Length: 251
Image 1 (cartoon, rainbow, N blue to C red):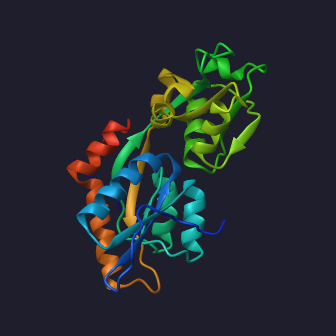
Image 2: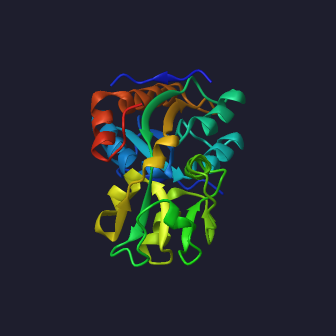
């Protein structure tokens, strides 16, 4: 896949703005990995402020689910995934433009506040008494989990495998799991609902996030132009600052 590093289920999108529609209004549909929720909500709001009349709708889900939706003809204008492997599928199908890397992320152990299971290391997650939740292998956070665990020479026995990192985090925050493997940005976003436990082995799997415009049937010229402008906004210093504030690292 040609990857350029930046310098600085039915689809039910979530609208980031409301208002009275006019014939000059443009709806821009952005598909983004679930781990990008907070960042893209902020970037989308800023984009709408910069481009009056544009309504950015976000479809936030696991990257593999987003890819499947685009392959099935869902009306996406922009897609951002949590790793290059999932984006490669869309590139191979000639469904997107040239992807550009805009952020990186690594895994961290998330435990409920108070850490009732006393987890302190990655190896602790192999203890049978620890109820562990991870992402499914086909999801980027699951692929990263596999890479990290293989690198460490460990075997995990999770009680469930989820389709998005937000689902893993949800089970931890709800007290349904003793621990989960999520991104450092998810731990930060959860605040005091969870505790984060960094581990050295996480460096074995650094996920690079790519973004690309989507060429689709029925897309207007204005939507195509706005799609590229949204990509540019993510890559801009302001967009990169939003991502950095939320814990993402530069690509």
